[in-house]
Length: 219
Image (cartoon, rainbow, N blue to C red; front, side, top):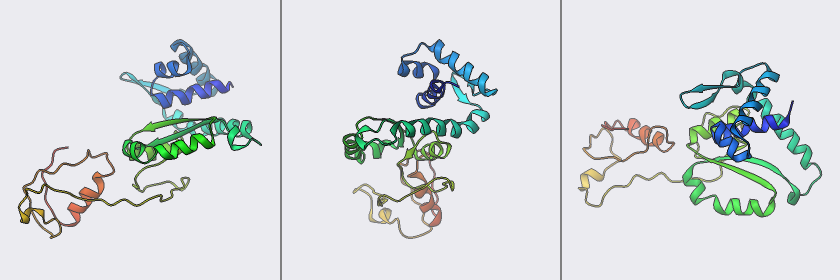
C-alpha cells in the first residue's frame, strides 16, 4: 500500500474536495481520482460517495479513518525519532474557532513556529461542535475551542482559560427592560443571538429556559 495514497486521502478530507486536494498536492485531478480508486481496491471498500456536488466519507471510510491516521502518524514519528525540536517535521492538524484563531492564537502559533520550524501547521477554522467531531474522528490532531462537553473517553480535554459570558443592552432601554435577573419575565426586545450551531448559543438558551423567560426568535 502506497503511503502517498493515505496522504492524498487525508488531504481530500482537509480541503473538502478532490479538486482542492489536487491543487494543494500539485497533482492533476485525475491522479487524485486514480489514487483513491487504487486505495479502495486495496482496502476492498468504498471510501467516498458523491452527495450533490460534494464527496462525503462512506461509513467504511469513517471507520477506517482512525487507522489511516495512526499509520501516517507512526511514519512521522519514525521520521522524527531521535531528532531535536528544531528537526521535527510532519503535519499537525489543528481545528480552532475563528474568534480564538484571530484574537488568542497568533502569539501561540508564532512561538510554535519558532520552536518547530519544520512542522507544517494545517489550521481549519470552524464551529466548536465540528471541531469536537473532527478530534474524536481523528480528522484533527488538536482542537482549541470553547467547552461544549460530550467528549469521548479517548479524548483528553484540558481547561486553558475561563471567559465571562456577558449580556449587554442599549443604554436607551428603560430601567425595567434592563432587568435580566428576575425570573418569569416576558420582554418585548430584539435579541441578537448566534446561529443554533454556535457554542455561545447554548448558554444563552439555557439561561432563558432556567429563568422561565419566553422569547420569540428567528434563527
